Length: 296
Image (cartoon, rainbow, N blue to C red; front, side, top):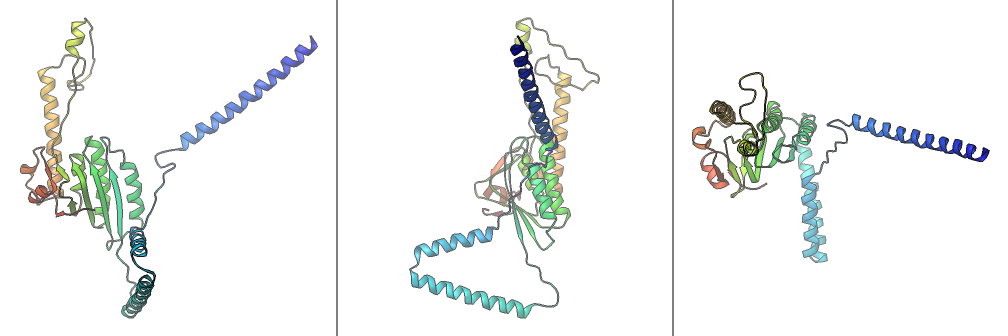
């Protein structure tokens, strides 16, 4: 009997220790999660693209040139570097001459413009060191999405303009709707020949299951305070008044979109391009939606 009592006491102590350990671990995990805000664990990776291209060039040279030719090439490159450095030193004035830098960012947009947080951090990092002599190039790809999300993304690009730093947007594949809302902020827009550009319009769609619910004797009630708190619904019976108000809201959003594009690209005939249509890059140049046909 005494053995069972001692065993039970030991078991209770062991369980208590395990539970205490589990609670401590749970608290640690919870603290880490609470401390992990939008910027927690954020990682901005910086690559020098010119060095990367030089490495690629050297790899090709080593593959196609024989040993003697490669040796002669490297010798001439070193001589050229020395000559350039000497010339630069000779021309240098008392003023510190800063070399122009090109900062390249990428934005791959989904319907919610989820990449805006990463882009915000990247722009903050660039603005901490960039000057008016530098330039920012954004390689943009997006078919658009939510108005408020892409409005925020456009505002992030406006921060670059506010610092008087030249901004170029390059569209290799698509910048439509919200994507073009971002692109039009730039000082210069570059597009590939078959990149899809435009879609300056607004669309909203939702299914309605009211007839199906009614067929099966299912009532759906929605209570609101305010005539237009809910205009259209998926389950209730929609009214002409609600549809008219919803249409009015879409039209107003379209007006704001057109005004935004017109403000940022005064050269466009906004009524001609704000039809919701899209154009390939070559046609977009004709409509002044982009400036140059090229790729990133």
